[in-house]
Structure formats: C-alpha cells, structure tokens
Image 1: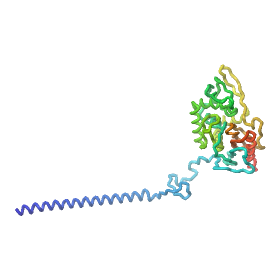
Image 2 (image 1 turned 45 degrees about the vertical axis):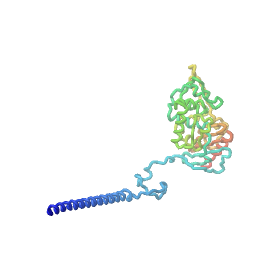
Image 3 (image 1 turned 30 degrees about the horizontal axis):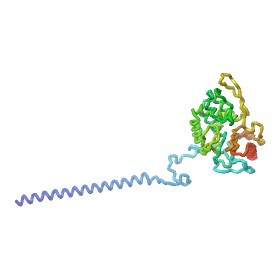
Image 4 (image 1 turned 120 degrees about the horizontal axis):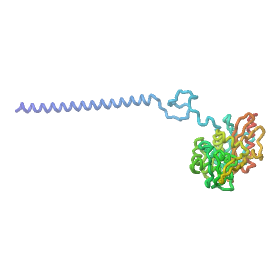
Length: 355
C-alpha cells in the first residue's frame, strides 16, 4: 500500500513541476515579446522621425528647415508667383504734387515695369457703376462666340430706359461682337443684359461667371449682382480690382479695338427683316473733345461709369512717347469735370517719370 501511495504522490509533483516550467516559459516569452516591441518602436522613431529633423517653424521664415521635395532645386525652376506680372501694393503710394482731393480712390500702374506709380485707397470697396462692363466684356470674350446672332427680347430690355442704353428694340438681331462694341463704346445697359442672357443663359448664371472670373484673376474685393453696374449695395469693387479686370480684358483684341473707338456704326436686322444702321458714340471725354490729355501722353481708350452713388469713374489705357503702357483708374469723383482734371493729374506722373 505504501508503494502505491508514494508512486501517486510523485506523479502529482511531477505534474506541478511541469506546470511551473510552462508558466516560466510563457512569462519569458511574453517578456521577450514586449522587449521586441519596445526595441522596434525605438527604431521606428529614430529612423523615421528623429533622423529627418522635422521642425515646425514659421513657413515664411528665412532660417526654417526645408523638408520639401523641391529642396536643392534652383529657384528659377520653381513655379512663378501669382503676382509676378502684376503691379502690387498693399496701401497708398504717393507721388509729388498729386492728390486726388475730389475723388475717393485712384491708381496709376506702369505695365512695362510692373510698378505702382500712384495709389490712393486702392483696396477700398466702392460702387463701380459702368466700370462693371469691363468684366461683362471679359466674360463674354472668354466664353462667347463673337459671330453668334442674338435676338433682342424682353429680357434684354428689362432696364431703366433713362439709363445709358444702345437703343435696342424688341426683335433686333445683332452679333455678340456688335453688342460688345455697344457695351464698351455707348455703355449700353441693354447690350449688357442681352450679352448676359446669351452667354450665361440667365442674368444669375452670367453674374456667377463674372464673380468666378474676378476670383480667378485675384479681384477678391469684388462682388457683382448684375452685368451693367446700376446701383445695388451688394455690387462693389475696388480701384485695384478694376486694374486687374482691365489688364485681363486687354489680352483680347476686340476689347482693345472697342475702347479705342470714338464712334462705331453697326448694321443690323430689325424685327421687320430690314437692315438698319446705328452709330454709337464714345462716352469718354478724351474722345468727345471735352478733355485733353497732358502733352506726350496718348489716351488709347478706356471705360467710363457714372451713377449718383458711385460718382464719376474712369479706367484708361494710356501710352508715353516710347510706347510704354499705363493703366489709370479713378473712382467716385465728385463730378465729371473733376474726374478728368484729376485723371490728368495722374497722367502727368507719366511725364515726370521720364525726367
């Protein structure tokens, strides 16, 4: 009996010893696995993060650590800045003996040298009146077909008849090209509506195109609600944004030619099917003979705008005797006479620059 009891006890002890050994193995394995994880994490941290010296610093600081894939590439191989071809100013730029006392804002830009020669309140939001039509023409030229024939209907004629118009009538048929000339030379609000409906499908869609185009060229202080510029408190721009729009529109030959015309005779079809002629005359005093530019400055053309709220406005393209081009803008002048006196003050800076 003792031999049997002693034998059973020994087997039990053996099983207990085996369990203890198994637990030690499991513990050691777990410890080794944890150590492996810690070592792996340390290596990942060192080789991925620490060795690259990532630094969160001022992105515009000169002493920042560069981590871009373009590091080491010469600057001339990088994409040019958006403003590389623009005249840029954050505030006023003074010029000797020039002060727009009778206007709210104004600017003179040297396109060749990309230099701001004068700036006064150029980023102040103001009502543009018919300077709006610079953008109307730009969108039409960019997205429309100049040879399309446009039927004049009630949508185009839904406008104040006492405002500036081309005297379009229901049933008239003109091309988009002809309407752009009427828009820019006679400053026709009816032409603006006709263009908007044809190119955009509706006033709302066309205005959305105008606002998108303004955004794309950097005119971020501009918002339009119509295509002609009649007063609305939510319809505004700045002298600087007018410069941006005017500069962009000058890329189109039709725009350059239209603003250069003192008058324009159009042949079109009326509702009775007969051909008629009408002559539109420029509203620009430099072209009507009511104002004369300073000596050695040639006014190539421009766009006018006038409402009670906007005052008298004008944007011009001018040239010096050497063919260098300049854009000048005046907004919210007290009267038209004051507008052209002060515009001559701006244009006189061109001559002073040549001295």
